[in-house]
Image 1 (cartoon, helix red, strand yellow):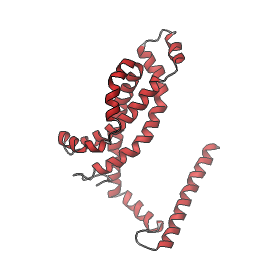
Image 2 (tube, helix red, strand yellow; image 1 turned 180 degrees about the vertical axis):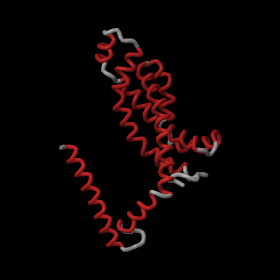
Image 3 (cartoon, rainbow, N blue to C red; image 1 turned 30 degrees about the vertical axis):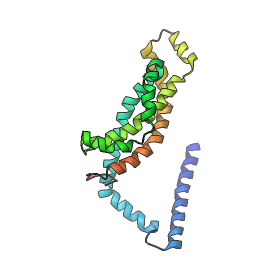
Length: 203
């Protein structure tokens, strides 16, 4: 029942958006604001042509970057969260690099890796990596001690703690970090795809 209500609300929201769009097109009556009646047929025609190819290329780069960043950032973040000594050692470096807009590294990445898909994926992965790393590290470090002690009392070692306590507890934080960082990563991808790229939404 709740799912049906959410679906109805989503459909109603889309319809209201289209109605408002059409009203604005009627009011403005300028080429800068075409009506959805003109735009949507062209959009669906293009999505099965060149636009679809560009969309798939950009989607592939983003998914590859997400996979790489999650595979690396989650274990590293959990390791730092479990080890205060390691966290104190790497915290200054993370504090310096994390707030820097990663797009400034684009020329350096192009010089080192060339203007290829690998360099674009690396740039996106770099953005997502630090978002996930910081959130997972903080989540693991702030885990309730009684959870850890209860599992340790059953004879669990570090690997079991990692698998059954730290990772499940940090999974919501990983998903939250992905939701926040993917939007930024896509915006940066559009900038990166403007450089010697033949396929991609930023082309």
